[in-house]
Length: 231
Image (cartoon, rainbow, N blue to C red):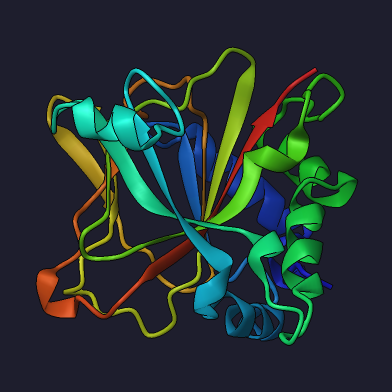
């Protein structure tokens, strides 16, 4: 239901794997991996303002509280963005079952099997204490940021980013930027139904998000982020 059959045929998986092996850092970009009609339905939910809550990280503390944030220097602050909170929905609003279903799908056997085939590693939540917190929706506005960082937690094998920005203006910013090698960075625009998969332990995979252009201050950059471990 969620995947585009054309992108998961055996021939397509072989092409994805080959692209991964020949990339630096180890990453692939797959456009149209998911069923676009289903993503269109999903975006109707994600555009409801009451589902979102500001999230702040510093390099010394994840989920920094107000005091931690205020005392941290500008250089110490590395993430400010909105995170999706299903429990904040008003009872008068249609239940966000579709949004929850998609997050569950991304942590289900079918999708993790696909990742295992592409990366040739066994992806599983067998030893993950709380899988649900590792897959969620995020959005960035013009005042938000994700600065340079690495996602190479022990045992983490795959990071997935799926962009949900329909008719994205190429001048709006918001590109994913891998540090790369010898200052040869790799920049990937956050286009609709574009999936980026990468090995967070591969050289050059440190990354950040380019700032949004203030001329597009009414624009949000939406994405799903998901992290995966091996056995």
